[in-house]
Length: 293
Image (cartoon, rainbow, N blue to C red):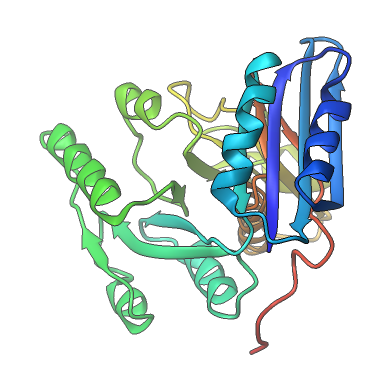
């Protein structure tokens, strides 16, 4: 049995000793560990993968660690590595990120359980249904936005979704929804933030003659495209590429960046650190697929 312990608290002496000592007492062997002490915010972050070699049950570990967590005033969790995070995907009329997530999920490269797809269009209904997944069409207009978001929240509740992924969902979520689901919605922005924001960043990039284009995945907040950044990447372009080339190359980067962000969140590797994030590396074997093709 393999588990993951996540810890976030005020930095102080003795946290690592208390944590590792507890795991040793419970017959657990640490197989991978990462920690970060942010001297600017005074916060400590840690992610520890371990095996319960003597078969200590999860609830026993959680109960036993409670007093230690309380003494350090920790935000913490112990997660079963075999559990798959329930994810709800939202998409509009651009399907490259959706298709990429579905493929990675199908071959086991993403440690998630997709519980459904929501769209304000019918474009990808057949694609979703062919994957034996629930498809929810929630049309959004200026007049029905409140009702549409109520429907969205109902789907989240009914499906048990722990994470919502905006795979190029082209509707702005309300401030109240963003606050209600803070830290549980991931977006992909078709730009290497903070440059070239707006409706057509690739055209702006082309007009400025940039040599790098990219994408940014971040948590959704009430401030549009200003949420804590999880993952970014770029690809090189030259003067010889057209605006359409920029779009095509950018789509590949978007899909990869979003998939990496979802992977990191699902494996409890991302910690909110005020307006930023701490993202720890994946444990060995974390990217292995159940099957290929």
